[in-house]
Length: 232
Image (cartoon, rainbow, N blue to C red; front, top):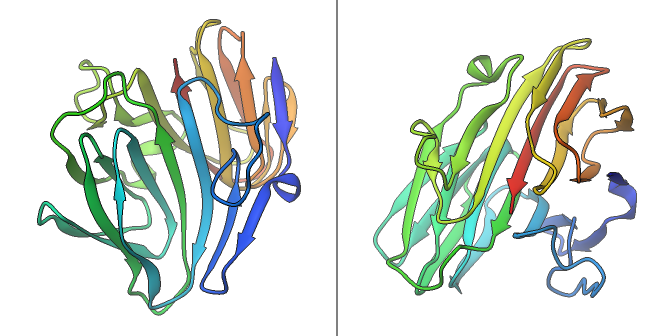
């Protein structure tokens, strides 16, 4: 089952410094019929104006993955971690028993991110943060796991969830396939370019919810970059 969620029909918020689209119920956009897709709880498409951002605020019991599409985001948290994550890189934060952090765009250009929240397999635990580059060239033509709760995914950033986050870049005409499994929940968003997912067309920043499909086959109709979540 493939459900297309067009970008122009997503929940939205415009705070001036922040333009956000919400693939699921979030903040002032409350939709009781669209709270999650399996353990995937949040997928926000954020555009953050230069020299603005999110001041320090708390999180707990959530795995938070930030995929930077353009620009860069600067993170600082109550554990003393600080880092700048730029386009092509990924950061993860396991909020665990509780953490406060801020995220700012200190760049001269608009920063564009996907922020993804996944429910952990267990509550509590020591919070932690990490970031890693995932060069687009290394993701060309194939899915690469960028964050994972599975120990076998040694090169991915670790999360405490029964889930995997993958990314790929495809040239027009290229195809990539991922064995999802019929009991899993898949959610896919192209950052740019149009694609077909198991024969269903999706345009840039549309959401594609996948359920009861053994595999996900993505064909690029244009050059594209996309992110896929495989969740319990």
